[in-house]
Image (cartoon, rainbow, N blue to C red; front, side, top):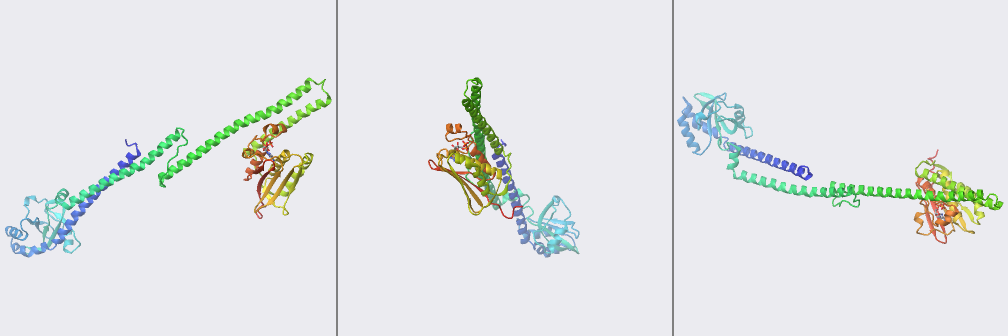
Length: 490
Ligand code: ADP
């Protein structure tokens, strides 16, 4: 039963609150008792002193007990509960009045408290009660002369039987009883309210536990309802965040798995068709070797060669992309003039563009900035973008490579007047093996890896590759590189 957090908390709380109640009651009763002692002693501070002149006449030659008892009766009335003792100078009991001699348990009184009382110390001062060993009582005391011996003491124990025990004191006092009942009631109410609060608090924990258990069972949609900002609320928030992250990670894993399957399917498909084609052409050449016209034979071999080249490109690009994605390529970041690089790459593509009747040109700003990046990798990005632009732009089209100096970046834009990319395809063109027109591009040799490589390279530079395209008008790819930080280079 004590396994539940609520039961543990409640048990602890009840023990604490009952303990606290008992402590409070004990202290309260003790304080009340001390207060009563103090009042009694203050009211009767001079009692002993007042008795001395009335007793001394009966103590001159001998102790006239009967006369003294009569005087006491006379002075105090019948109900007054006091004990009166005559003490020697050393505290030994000489005589006692208003007390049967047989009831005396102690025949000597500690004079320390008596002296402090007579010196006027703060009250209450409690002294020995000869009728009860070890019990301290309020008293009044004064010097008295006994049979010619001065310096003896008249020692009066006040209210001796009044508070013989705590129980009798509580039993007799209406105020104390009421106070104790009140305290009991407060303890009861506090316990009730505390238990209710704990129940509410642990209910929230139980609710959270149910959610976590559901989550564990596979209900990944379950989330904790967070209604407050306290520790439990924050724990709920933490759980929700953790659940979100876990769900995201699982989704990523699922997607990675899907992509891996797709990749295997795509790779095998893309490898199979050029291999099949090479095999087919070579078989034909080998079978019909004697009957084939030289031109026909040449055509077959050229096609087989083209397919072999495609195969080679595909395998190299795959290898390159996999190295980039697994971060096996560590970019060497160094400053270089981007305008010169753009010019070089454009120049490399000029002959091919001319062949296709396409005008390719670089548009550079007057001020040539230097950027910080891996020159080899940036060249690869530019080549892929310019290659695509020339590849997809029809005869008579234009390809422009523009550089723009921005605040602390240089913006590189490769735009063409090609067919453009449909809006639905735009989000996917950076995926591996994604082709807008699958059949056409495969025949033309595009593997669908060029943009994936370019995007991954820019990600290694903490940059993004953006695309804007209008079908029938053209496409623009854009990325940025940081300008060289002057003063920080070696
Ligand atoms: P591919 O090897 O097929 O060119 P890419 O990853 O370079 O592979 O490009 C992915 C797809 O994006 C291409 O198949 C093509 O459909 C489309 N694409 C890329 N660049 C352009 C462009 N400049 N104009 C039109 N379509 C383009």
